[in-house]
Length: 75
Image 1 (cartoon, rainbow, N blue to C red):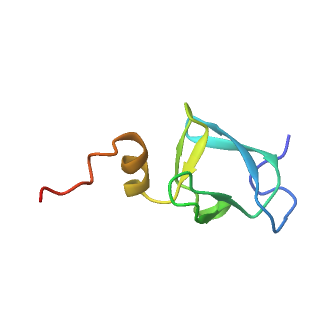
Image 2 (cartoon, one colour):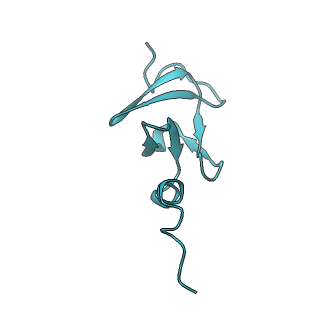
């Protein structure tokens, strides 16, 4: 089993998201945010969904994905 600091690669990694950790399935340097599409370097990955098996760049992206109306302001 590879860990998150296994062989370096410059492409996109494939991960299995676990509770409090993740497992590298295919080595790479980054994953993509499921909301923004932005690259997230593995050493900066902090937010993900175990149920949906997807990564998020920021807490706001988590809210946007799970609670789409939470960030809308009253107009």
